[in-house]
Length: 413
Image (cartoon, rainbow, N blue to C red):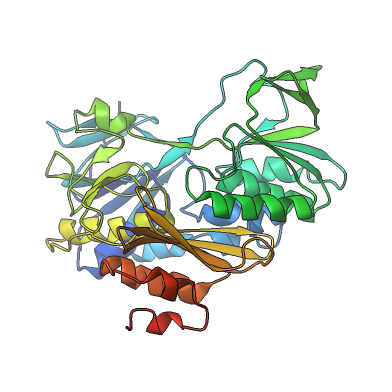
């Protein structure tokens, strides 16, 4: 096994949103040492959210999802080691080893390994025509099926599944969504919002079936032709997209002996149980002072902000991470923006008309205190709620629902 002659510096494991942000922030914070980024895809870091939206639709190219051009990394003296992955972090010798036989010494490590798709383990899972959507390569495979009239079955009614369904319908495909829960997006939104999205998708021509389990995929000649449910139904299709969640990539950290519990355990500065190893993004479990508990978040905002925090700490500056989480989803002409976490809410207050319109907000209160909002085409409600959540604002439900009162005045008596 060869050993790289250079030692020291920061090694970033992973090449996604958090990794790219870490390079930017390390240099912005004045870190002058060597930086190496190691990632298993061939492409430099790119944005994942557009993959199931405009990139899948063919409305934008890779240049619009690429976070920074390759020249940025060269200009910032960051060595890119792409198309390989780290096989071990040897903490005693402060060395990482890669799948292509190299070894690098380090002063600090930032683990930004992100997450991977949760795969479905049913008969026929390996048939040609069963797809996932996580990478640029996945999208290119899917786009080959996007022909008007083609039959698509989407397994999973979460963000990814519904975004794919929306793009597919706009391209004239015949789309059926199968969801195990009793409503779509059940893990992340209130039933009010679920009903709204079910209505919109049905109006757009998507067939949505809830309470349906997938028992297997069947095909002919090794190619998918139908999806079979546990309830005995068969759904003919030309291809399928499985979107049933993601799993944090924590195995490397666990094998290195780092603390792992529903993500790599970090403190408010992104530091793991090893003071020389940091982590950021989907793969972490971090403390959040606003909610008073530990969280593992799957969002671009979290990846960016945790990377900033970890980079600052590596550069010797302590900037605790403590922010209101936020997320978004684009489907048709609808932008869903979520601020905060609604878990444990005691009252949901609606502003607007989700039963008939295409613009509204649902505020989640816990004992009168705003803890989250789901805003559909309602930017002011989303932006103001982020600030109100951070302040633990106690609000009058009647004022929240009254659209004659602007969001800027919502706290006034």
